[in-house]
Length: 193
Image (tube, rainbow, N blue to C red):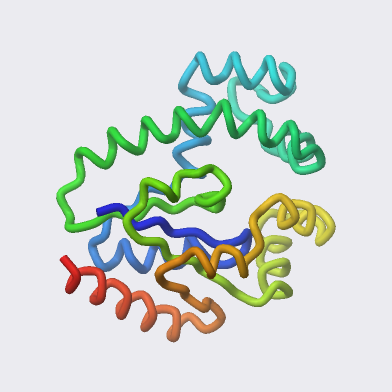
């Protein structure tokens, strides 16, 4: 069984994914795996350079600041980049999924709905937090401005739309309460199997 885990930037998806992982659930973090593929898959590298220019890489590594500045200010470029990267990530996920032995896996993706990969999930969990808290977390984590975070948020489906399309919602404001929600959802999923 595939469980999609999503939420807006700064909602705490990574924190929630780690809590599920501690319960033994295999986790595939699409953002991490996409970044790996974007430097190891030579076909992907060439397509990204063609789309964004040679500056997309510095010494063989992703120039994330450059890429972020380009795509989060240009929705069309972001869409084109996603059309290049998502098929490679989907194939990589499928290979990984075939190797897992737990009752279910979690596919964590900020753009689960936007990419269309939610269609291949049996259940969906959305992580949410107050917008002010989300912005504060991302500013501290990524050392960016509030304006840059707001630009990223505008490129994602709204929290309300994600919640309406989800089977479960985790409200991530208090860590202890978040842990309780994760345990409850894990138990519910395992009991359905």
